[in-house]
Every structure is written in structure tokens, then in C-alpha cells.
Length: 460
Ligand code: PLP
Image (cartoon, rainbow, N blue to C red; front, side, top):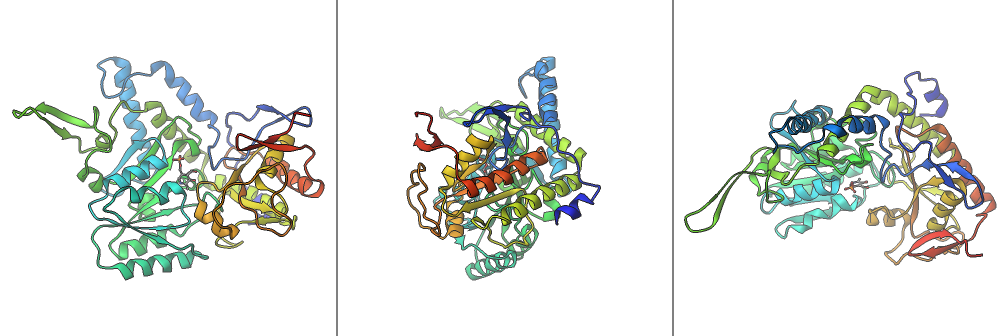
């Protein structure tokens, strides 16, 4: 959607209040500027609403599932109500037998799912995935993993999966793992179609919604995926919790992810001296140890805040910001935006690029030091995807003090800018201006490598 079309759309909402919006950071060139957090894809700032909810609860904080005291009971209710809120947010419950399990993060959620796969499960995963969804499956020696090549269109993704599933039939249990929105290109994957392909071949599908959930409604029943995984800290709720939601059967048939209190219902000594354990058959089976009640509540609060703000308006506003960034970068011929699916692909506010003649670490350091803009440089824990997009081979990262790539040469890593519900217009405007100035005039400061990071050289 073009900027003007979005501007004419009255449903665009204002940025949601987030923490850190008034934080001033020093510029190497002198003075201070308010920090432009444009690394939402790594960790988004906390929503003010989430922070306020957590602060209001903090005095009432108590042990969960264990205590007889008033605050313990209150905390237990809050924890379980948070589970119910998140279940509703994800559309669980419209399908019988879905569960919400609290984890530490998306990585933890997908490792949990890998741990509970039935014996000899066959897993299908695109090489383009974030390492969190690419790597957990081979941890189980009985799991056969098929890595699928990067598709260049959404339809090719569906066709590639269909073909891979069909070629390997017959198989027993099978799982497809796919990301909803790429953490590198921001492009949306055809989740519904991939789910239909998986199910048509008797496979199940888990959706890595780490980058999708903060930007779009994720309805497990409507997408017809078997599980959804996401992280609180990318959903404006940075208190160390994540979620794996979906079908209970594989989870309940498997041994607990962690053995300990909370997961066990009954423990008794056997006459032969050993120990018998009856494990819970609810979500608690995989939540051993004292639960992160604040993390769970923060996620529930974020789900409620996003729902109340209205995803239609949030999406419309984000599309406006995306259009501004893309239109701005398109005016700089030296900038090459990375894309698998092309310009017209629907996307979220995550965009990676390289700048001809610039080392990406150097460029990102200059955005920070000279403009107060926080982006990310590197391969974004999606090494195969970024290398495919850059056309480069695996190698050690280079020094950043001087541009390591001559004009016309390929960069070895990329720069990622990402934003969301809390981003004001000024941040993306400053970003576009900064890119244009750096490309036209060069950095105003010298940079060197320190502990593997590119930093302004202040030794002179
Ligand atoms: N999946 C995707 C698509 C991601 O972008 C990320 C993090 O960047 C993860 C999974 C892992 O998330 P976490 O680090 O919160 O476990």
C-alpha cells in the first residue's frame, strides 16, 4: 500500500506507548538525541501498558501452585488466567484439546516440541528458517530431517513442500516447521497453504510465530496449524516467558521436558527402592519448577493491549511505516534490499539490506553513533537464508574499520531495520535520512573493531 493510500485510511492508529521513548543517547559527534529503537525483531520495547500491569501486580506477587496464602492463590489465579487470555488470543479452545504451555522463549518452545516428537518422526523444514526452528530437530537421533531449499515465491514454497512430502511417503509421524514472517526479509509465508499441504499428507505443522505474532493476529484454528510458538520479549512483554500452544496429544504422551516439582502429580518409593512418578497430563507436565508468573502475565497483558488497540489499525500503521522505509531506500541506488519473494510480497516491519561499498557492521555502527539509531547487523541467526540472499559462502566476519567490500562486491553480512506498534514516524524518517546522508557523504567519524564489535574510534 502506498503512503498516501494508507494516510487516507482513517483506521491507522497512533503508535502505542512503549518504554524508552524518551531515553536520550549520546552522539559521537556531540550532543544527545532520543534513541530510535529500530531493532524490534530482536527484542521490542515493553508496552507501557504491560509495564503498568506488571507494576500493579508486583506487590501481590507470590508463589504459584504451591502456597496456601492469599497472595499465592491470587498469583496462581493470575497465572492460570494469563494462560486462558493467551489461549483466547491464539484462538485455542475453538479446537478441542489445545493447550498453552509456558516456556522461556520461541527457542525453548521449539526445543520442547522436538523433545516430545513421537519416535522416528520425519521433520520437514526450509533452510530459510531462523536457527531456532532449523536446529532443534536433529537433537533427537531418531528424527529424520529433510531440509528444503529456499523457495523464490510463496507458491514455490507450497510446491516444494508438497513434493518433498509426497516423495517420502509412506512415513509414520511427520512434522513441518515453518516461520510465519521472516526475521530477515519480513516477508509473510503462506502458512495456511503450507498447513493444508502438510495435513493432506498426514503431517502436522508448527508455526514459528516469533515475528508474526507481534504484527498480525495469529489464529491457530483459522490457520489450521497444530502448534504455535512465540516469545514474550518480541511481543512487547520482556519478562522471560514464551509460549508453545496447540495440540496436547504429543505433549502428553511424552516424558516431561524437565523432571521436577510442578510436573509431577504423585511420587512414591517402590518396594525395590526406586521411585515411581505420576506426571501431570495438563500443560504443567512440561512446566516443572516454579513458573514465571510475571512473564506469563506480561504476555497476557500484551495480548490484551494489542487486541484492544485493534490489529487492523496497527497493521495499517505498520504498512505505512514499511512503505516509507522502502520508498526511501529505493531512492538510494547503492542500497540493495534483501528479498526472497519480491517487491510485492506482503510483509511485516522487518527489512534487511546491504549498502554497496560498505561493511554492514560499519554502517550500523555509524547509524548508532551519529544518529542514535539502533539497528542490527550480521546474519540474524538465519545464516543459510542470509547467505542465499547475499550469494556468499560461509566465512569469518571481517574487520569493520575500513569497508571490506569494494564497490560492486558482495557484502558478507547485512543490516536489519525493524519496527512495530510503538514506532513513531520520526524514527523511520530519521533512519531514511541517515541512510541517504551516510551513502552520500560517508561517515563523519572513524570506527574500529573492539571485542568483535564495530565502535567509534575515540582514541584520537
Ligand atoms: N524464530 C524467529 C523467526 C526469530 O526471529 C527468533 C528470534 O529472533 C526466534 C525464533 C527465536 O526467538 P527467541 O530468541 O526469543 O527464542
